[in-house]
Image (cartoon, rainbow, N blue to C red):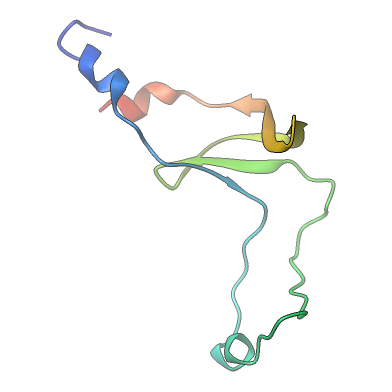
Length: 84
């Protein structure tokens, strides 16, 4: 990190913890109503994916932090690529 790049460290970037994702036909989407259950092709025991700027950077497990949700990081990639 050079002094010229230091200000970038104060920028905020979106961090997302993704539980699961899937595609659905539009006919199934418009039929959704309260109480509907959507099944995902993923085990409930699998690590959650961590995304920064919509790019996968690591994985972790859900934890409770007081009354809030958190994630304990199990793996993390090289984050320097997000510094431009």
